[in-house]
Length: 356
Image (cartoon, rainbow, N blue to C red):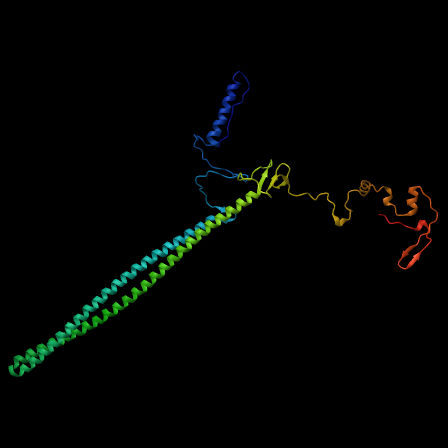
């Protein structure tokens, strides 16, 4: 958005008019170029920085157009792409199965045609063989007649014999053709069976790919649901930073016991007990540690005074104690037991009393 330039107001009778004009200009800039309610200058409506919703919801969204979607560390974009790839593979496998089925049908048709040709060749061979037999019979008859009819009958017999040989050769050729056609028919039948097997395999692969695509899509949907449920559960328990104590959670529902929020004013975590907000933890600064045996107090003398012990608490000699008490004792008989060795009649100045 271009910079807003306002005129300087130096005073005078038209000050109110100039102020109103300046406020109107500010309002128009916000309406037209910030809120984009009436963008008359056709400036690009592009965000320059990220938007921080501060743990609040974004409601009433029509469509979301984005490059990637990641929920709780799970890339939904990658899972959707994997599902689409599986679906594409399934479609390719189905297309290949259709081609194989068409090839199988063509091979079967070729096999049928070859078998028909073999049958025709066999029929022709049989006809040629019959014709050869007939010619041979005729030649025999004519040979018999040659004896009676002379040279004419001999020539006719020779011709009939030649015709018989030709018919026999044709019969042999037809039989060979029939054998070749039968072999071609067998090969075509084998090819048809192979194509049919390939078509079945491709169809099975297509079904498997389609099933994998469906499973991947279902897994992506389930992962998205779990991620959203986990985020909603966390969002109900940690509400984020607030300047004032919240009365409901981030979804507008009643607070649950154990919910936390960060007091951004006091700089401390607060815990919801079910009825009130309390400090979530107590600072350890200035605390006394049991293992230190009171050596970590700030002032030993102040501590003794607070306990009401007075000055006697630091004295460990009987004479000194009596001096403080303003009392006089010259001799006292004391028996001290140290193991099995008694000690008697010690001077008061040598008897020490440990400090309590």
